Picture 1 (tube, helix red, strand yellow):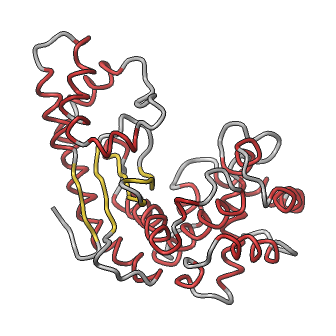
Picture 2: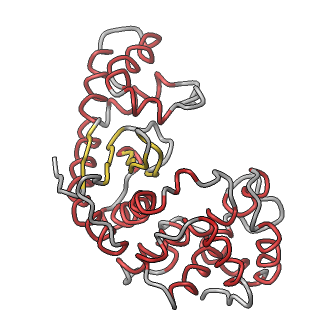
Length: 295
């Protein structure tokens, strides 16, 4: 599998498919426990990362999901092959942009079948962030490269500033972390519209952007009041599709990109990625004053 001195890839897709093969000819009711044993049971560290609350995969019809994925075996392998080919150059570009070159701690990427949880995310694995890519949710190579750049930026940012230890629901640090990752992908793939970097090609971007621009002063006032907040409810108002209250959903991503853009005028990405949390909070507080709405 593709690897480099700055990248280590773990491909769990073959074990997933082997787990499904072990279910062949057995009653569907036995599939979930067999799958867990033959697939996740062989990767206990990944299982712990995915199932911290004991609720993963979060579907009542796990056997039905597994049956549908079994019929996609060739497609899953092809998607894994395609994204593995994107990883070395994508991760190397992020490492270069953020000034990370410690080959003793390479970026770890886990390819897996995530049962429709998400297409990719950064999360703690063995004490530091790793990049998780769920092949059943991946799309065209261009979109997948943006995903690698964005989520890879989170992983490298963690190497530089231990962002895994920052408050899970901190408004200031999430504005900064997401703004920085979006800025990294935009600088490394500049030929794409902003909606690709912010919404990954999902529909509805322009009406959302227009509403955010129309309500920009109100949003900034709310962000300023909540900048030090670390509770889930106020965090959700800026970063969740649900529980956003009366604000445009996920408006924090647009604010974060605008904030990092302003900071980027005076600081290189590699410097921003090394800021400790107290400085992040202080700099964001100053940058909010008169922040223009992005185009």
